Length: 531
Image 1 (spheres, rainbow, N blue to C red):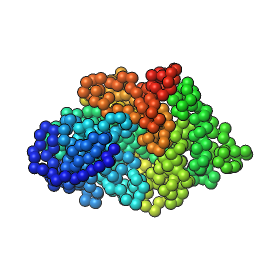
Image 2: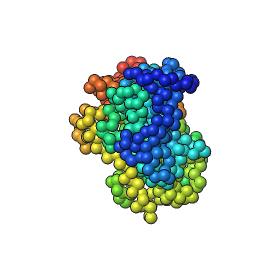
Image 3: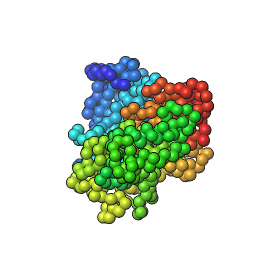
């Protein structure tokens, strides 16, 4: 965690093998020719030597801010940042964003589900970089929930199709070469949620651009999930259908009580969500009429069932997607973080900022991506029967759901992929990531997939360790990726820590899960991966 930052005047020293030439980067022009996708070039807007305490270690680095100019004069620039440390390890790492992006992720941060006992990449000597994906969020909007950039086609493609990722990567490597007079030996990408989708996007679209990728809880089929969220917004807006915070807590506690011990130990974690079958009708109020926080009405039971069931739409879209698998609320999703799930108030028009994150995401998408009418009532657009909006939905599907699982070129180029998802994710369904993994195995082949991809579902972990999850996952995936890319050694019997409860579990390759076999329940050695 970055706790201290102080600017230092950049000196005139020339670059060595590991110390960046920071002064020479100030106001440097970034030629359009260094980027493989169309831009109008770019320019460094600031370059300062910084001294910071990162991961408990004082480090010195050159912080470089730059703008990449659009082709369309009406489109916003891509704003990016590169951190170039003294003692460079000759590697680089790009961070993905989150939600609708709109801000630059901190290059001094950690990888998603990163370890609590190891330095962040910048403190390890990585040159790190990231961008806002080509638009700047309105400061008055909730973080990562401003979709207004979708009114511009270039800005939309930069974000939704991932064009900004490659532009940022190319420009950052140009700056790294200028700073160190050397090219990175390896370039990695790490991201979660939207950043996880971006990680899969770069592996598919530009298979030689990154040597290794960490993708966590990826919203890879973005439009498919948005359609489901739109349906759920309509369901939850019906009179009496929204379960309040107390009822959300009741549902979570009831599911955990019913399924916690199925893995052999009661520890607050459901390790085998597939084996958990909880019927919310067990919480039905007498006569199905709302009788307070200790039960669910029929309307609320229907809403819970809708959220945990697959959503299928009765029309074709160009991407070929046909459904979203629903959320694991009835098998242990963490209902103690309502902002990422139901929210604290029902969706309405205008959409409350206290409604669920995904419901607000739908509202912004309808206003700025679909209808391009900021006054559009998003609850009036029915994702089951979109009418005049069908052709636009189909067109957007080719931009937002372009991850087709053909990672064969990435694998043949020597790329390695670590894929992670929390089993209790309340915002992006782990079922969706499991579906993506199975698609990769079908397209690439099981043996070839095993040679370049590892997929782990972390029991009890929610979306991005938000709030107080049952299991706050922490694993040194970056070191594991380094060993795999550089030495050909894939992860073997990895162990994930719970950063909150000071316990460990085996990190089981999907579809395995950890079953308790005896001994100290806080130690990974007391569990065995099973199916």
